[in-house]
Every structure is written in structure tokens, then in C-alpha cells.
Image (cartoon, rainbow, N blue to C red; front, side):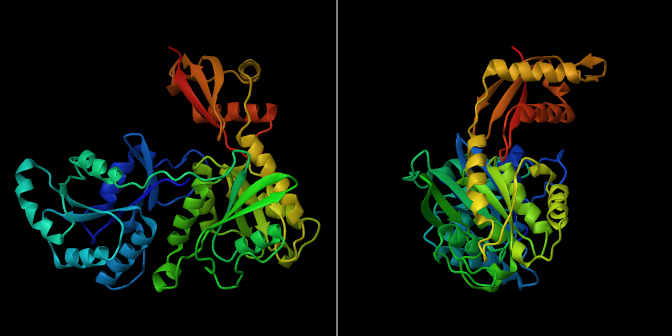
Length: 436
């Protein structure tokens, strides 16, 4: 089940990115200490009143040198396609402009709920200036201040009130849901067909042939799967075919619903920056990951080629050092039989639980091997650890001061846990907490 999605739409310079940053707050969590994680801030997770949702900042969508109003129209169209609720943002200091009216005309055409917010209302005296915005025809107007954080609570109360009812997926708990993500034309649909043994998904050399995400139930050797083939593009049009970030939005929806994510690379073309961005979202979402190098049949190779390609992947995707790598060809179906066992293993790792006493034996042995560090004359003391969650496996380490648990030592403990237990394919999280 995917989270509700909210899009912030409006003409330039009304403060879309400021409001986006205010709402997501600390949830923009680039893993800065791990080399190789890259992501842009067009799309992030947010939470209000225990309700998680995804937020799109359409101001972050670069559509090139299109005319001013054309840019607005294209950004709004993307939001209308993707969002469950749209926040229409205006500027209280400038009043209603012709561009605001153009945005309103576009939003009239959608059947999505639209919540009208007037930004830059920085003090109570300015509230008298918002009444002209009622003429835009979207009902209640919500005055807010992105720079001061005023009024956002009332706005978000209204936004989450429009969220759709949570739909329940009719899949058994034992069913493994996996998605295929990657830039257009790496062969995701061909790989689906190879796994199914039949032509269930349109395959074309034209990037973006897949228009909608497709769920395909599938059973192999008694195990039930659901294959989520991510859409590269929803419909034709310059905006969709010129905006790489749009395909990322599509992939994120699929990632949220998956147990395992297949990051599909083009073995013939090699690795590009967009591959790292997309893979970074899978890692950040805490899903199990299998890296799939497709089109391996088209690569000229010798006995060293596979090893060198794997080393290249490890160098570019250091944050996915736990992910197994599968080389295959969807076209010839060579080595495709190796993929499902890897998916099964990654899913099993994602749900693995470690007994507390065994975990603490491993932690204490690790500390004996590599004593805890000191900072400003104070030494980190580790008292005990316990696993508190799965999917992904999450461990709380109780210490004297969490600030002393430096990333490098946390990474050392993670590696010792991985050495002791088989978490292949799954990320794990370690949280430092002061002992009460």
C-alpha cells in the first residue's frame, strides 16, 4: 500500500520550496556519511498527526527553457497525475496575479482535492489582505508563513482530511512483492516477461514505453510473488519525456509497496548518475535490494569482465554494499533462473530476527576486538543491544551518551553483526540510545 501523495503547485517565487522544506523538516535524510548516496529534493516523506505521506515540490521539476506559463502548466499536470491532494500556493504580498488565475484554471480540471494556501502572511495584520484569494474559487483560504512556520498546522489538518481511505491489498503475508526500478530502457519490462515466460508487458526499444505500474501475481516453486513493473512514463508529451525526475516519482510509488527492490542496470551502457539516484531512494526506504545487471549478452567480455563490472558497481554504490549482484540477459533469458533465489534470500534477510543474548555476545566480542572510542576525554560505553524491528532489521544499542556513538564505530558494529548473521540483501539500522 503506497502512502498518500501531496503536491505543492504554484507560480514561481511563491515559496514552494520553502514550504516543502518546512513540512518535511528533518525527514530529508540524505545519508551524508555514506559515500555515493545521491538524491534530489523534489520528493520526500513527511508526517503529520501520525499520518505519513509523500510530498512533491513541483518547483524542483526542471522543464528546460519552456515559456513561463507553459512551465507552470506542465508542473501542474505532473502534480495532477501523481497527487492525491494538491496544495495551491500563492503569495500574500503580491495579491492575486494573472499567473495565479492561470494555475487555478488548470486545477479546475482535476478531480483531486485542492487546498489553497496564501504564503508570506508573516503577521496577523496581513490577514486582511487574503480575502481576494477567495475569488480563485477553492473555498477556504489558509494563510501561512514559510519563513516563520506559521499556519502550517491548520493547512496540514485540512490536507490530511482529504486523504483517501487506506486501501488494503489482497495479498497474503507470505507473498513476496518485488519491484523493478531503473532508468528508462534498461530492460525492466523484458525482465518481467522473462520471469513470467510470456509476453505480459509491452517491450520496446523506445524509452518510456511502460505507461502505468503493473501488478502481476506469479507463483514459482510454491512461492507466491507479485511483480511490480514500474512505469517509466504515464503518457506521451514533452514534459514527461524530458523530465528524468518524473520516472523517479513513478519508481518511488513502487518502492513503497515492495519487500524487495531490483535495481536494474544496463550492462551495455554501464552506470550513470541517474542509476545512483534511483538506487539511493530504495536504500533510503529501507527495502531489501538486489542489483541486476541486464543485457549481459550484449557485453564483450573475457574472464575478468564480470569481476571488473562488479568492482565498478561496488565503487559507485558503496551504500548498497549489502546488495547481491546478478548478471543476466532478459532477452536470451540466460542466468534469469538465478534471480528468484536471490529475491527469496533478500526477503528472508529483511525479516530476520536475532535473539538478544546472541546479539549481545557478538557486540561484546566486537568491543573486545576494537575498544570503543573516546571523545573529549569521554569514552563510549556500550551496555547492551536489542533488535526492535524488522523490515528493515533495526537494532537499538544502549550507551552512556549517543553523541559518542560516532558513525565510523556504528559502521564497525554493523559489519560485525553482518559477519555473525546473514543479512545479505537487506539494510540494517543501528540506533544509539542513552540507558535510562
